[in-house]
Length: 199
Image (cartoon, rainbow, N blue to C red; front, side, top):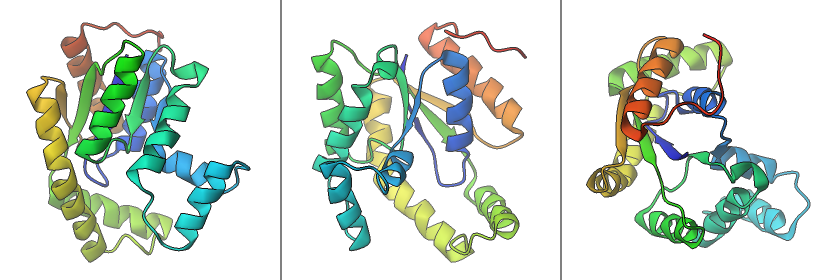
């Protein structure tokens, strides 16, 4: 199963990505995790990414596309994957489409965690107080939410037109959100989990 997960900052994408990965036996591929891992990796591409990040620059679509393609070419992604944080632009969608088409594959579904903005702000402020995250101030959170809304609206339209969207209420206890997500995804794809998980 080849999936994407999308949602506003604080909607719980990382948490639910882990749940989907476990249930369906596919790796969760987070571009954020990949970029963080590159801080210590000893490859020319990792050095290039480090130089850009150190200078405060923007990692281009070309570099991001190459990084994701390399990750999806690894053996654990042969049976499927869940992408988190990519694609972020229509151009990246086209590149992903072409990459998958070259392997005779296509996306099966795009999970969208839907969450009320005000409730997400309160969730993140609570997390900031607990974890001591100085960047999670209300103004910063709302800017990130607006950036997400501006950048992802065109992508949601692309995937809606392809009838790939699986929209799930992202608020509530983790287990409840996970169950809603599994039920909606199974209904959409007709897929049974590849890995049996107790409970």
